[in-house]
Image 1 (cartoon, chains in turn red, yellow):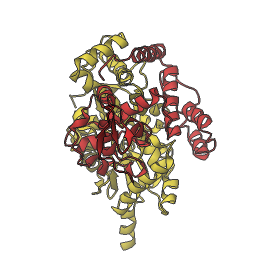
Image 2 (tube, helix red, strand yellow):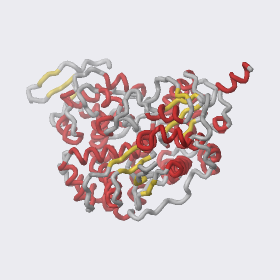
Image 3 (tube, helix red, strand yellow):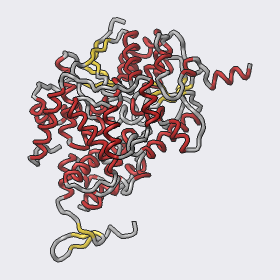
Image 4 (cartoon, helix red, strand yellow):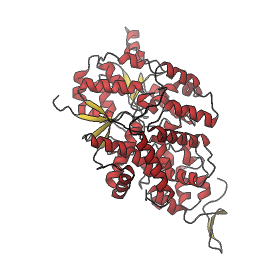
Length: 206
Length: 303
């Protein structure tokens, strides 16, 4: 990172800028409320980043995400690839001396980014999660073949993994038709109810 | 053999499709060991890698519905073969027990009685700890002599340890190693037992998955393993289906079979369909069945 982000300065209007960029005062609290995690507990030892299997592909290191969220640098954090690349392997939280559940923080940042309509730098990953959940909402269970097909249409990657898919089909490993479990309608109602409560805002503390 | 117990059984979505051989071998092995598995009627998707990124209440409720169904069956524990499903059900169960207000909210969404008493157990844990290595050793008909096995636990079977409430040593778990020893095989010492394969990025950031999987495959080979054994359909997809492309990208030419631990058990126990399931993998695993392992070959060469 070329620019310094450590220098803080309060302008006359009371707004805090870091490295010339505006910060959002309530952001840390919003993340803490959604994730149930205390961001200020992190003392920046970097254990999370050292053990993160996908850090090599990230633009912000996991410990930077925590610190920048704490400092209210909402735009930088919400526009980062890192919040989408986290695979939730929990290596970081397992090793964190302060027990910060960073995957929960990443989950919350995805939720905020989605709610605010921030352009996702990893559109395929976002499309994957949306498609996955649409499928579960519709059918109660995930139909893998439908997920792959819908994802191909959304991302335009029509030919990726076609040979592997054909081989799976030949081995009898792809169910052609979705299952229709008894609880299908109930699952749909759970989705609707959770959406309604999320829409009402500050429902649960997470 | 008097302590046979019945467990609720949660196969999860993958075991009804891409991980069919995991389901078939799990049921066969448990039946042979006298472990009764009763599939949870009307189970739903656990939400796995997607729901928790959308809404914590949703992800907890999706998992909780399955736990409520287990309670309705009158059973205390649900055996879960898929590591990802196990993780979701176990973490949700833990949170419901720890956080009374969350439990209340989940109950009000669910509209079902939910005590939070049902406990999710990894099928591996049920087999290795409840059945125990002694009974498994007794059931072995064709010991895996000379077979060097890389025991791959991956992430979700062991982490995060506090929420999963397991007694595995998180950085160096042992249950799969003990199981392989009971089958007559030899677990190799290797440092990648709990490294991540890239999991749910398989379809979207395949480049990341190729790198992570290649690292695991190369380390298993370098440590002298004849095969890798795992307990997760996603790990299987990334290590088996993507093995060719991952190793090609890494400039490697070898192949190493990947098996579910239940398939390895079925082989050692001499169950009739064991070799048929191995044909459902991408990397030919029949060499493991025929014991054409590196170790066996080098003994032959010496003779």
